[in-house]
Length: 494
Image (cartoon, rainbow, N blue to C red; front, side, top):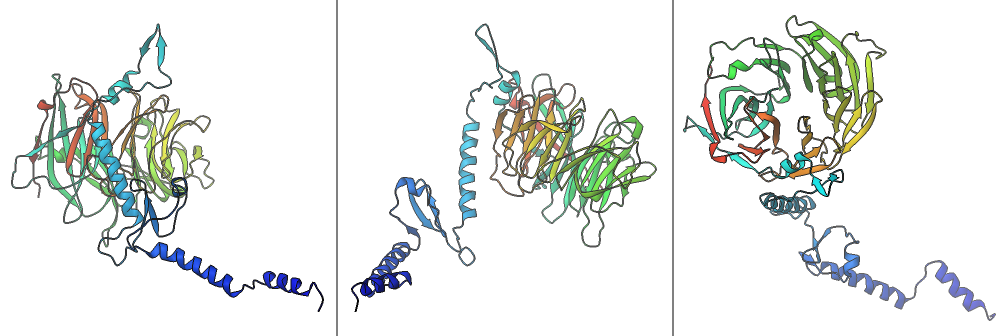
């Protein structure tokens, strides 16, 4: 045998993965040791990683608790009474964060100066809306019913204020299924108090409400326009409900009540331009229908996606639409619908489905929000975004935007149940308000903001409805909590 043969034979064995008995035993011992360390304790496992590695390593089936500085095993979750899952752990952390923010929110707040704050003669001129937003404190409106035998046990689903914010239309969930409608009348007092009268006439429906807006049929804000989703054998429709139907003073003259058979309507909007008087639009799957509320005449525009958000301009009969595809486009009602889509006055795109569009007063700028949580201010003349408002949270919910240009504020409630307020001028996030109740998919607060909540003598502030509770965040320091009286007068209809 040649001298180099045993060396060549060893190299061939290593090349083909051959290991001797002691090598195999050593590898098996290391594997068993690792498995034994992981399975030592079914509930919690202490691993010999350093602090730096613990923050980087993510083990399948385990989660790291930063407070206890150790890993814990995640249970399967499908056959355990108290499963420990990542979703449950995230909910716990979110609830801790909400409770901590709620406690901090009740403390006196420090005003943080924005980068754009002006400096003059060594005196800081703070933007007034930053001071007011920071000073907004939560006050609960106690709802007292004249009928003590039937207290308010229905959760608020939606609240929508009219143009003057003297009335707020409410949609409440009913325990046995369906929805109940009502109107809250607000009255402000120069002494700094706010009174609320809720006219609940028990108008029920077993269909889901997709969209709501106030309509001016006989006079300004005389009706409420609702898009109702069909259920089982009941088809969807669009209804015009007279606001007088929910009035204690004139219950015998409800006004014009009509319904239009338009199925699967995602959104609706009312036109206040005189050139399209008494006209409303509905956004459906792959089309937009513009209807004359008096004659019933319709004009249909074919589009390529579901239309989830709509709003009319005031100066011209132009309708802005937001689609599930992320497209935002406008329709000039003076042009008839054509197959080549030449009636589209302008168009631009977001990266996700549009949930809300809001036109500013000069109608050259439009706000659009999508299901990625992006809120952008667009210049419709050049179809380019000029401002972005960061911090909003949304994944798949239909969430509206609220704009108050008089105070320079933009508001939105996120899917995480936090209400955020931005400066409309520079996009700065001014305030994040946690929900007074634990977050949930069906417990997203609904809000209304007005400079004159309750009419000409009204008070500025934010109205929040969550679960069965109503809260008021005053926008000035003169508010008297003792003056708030919420009375409920129930008027039942056949």
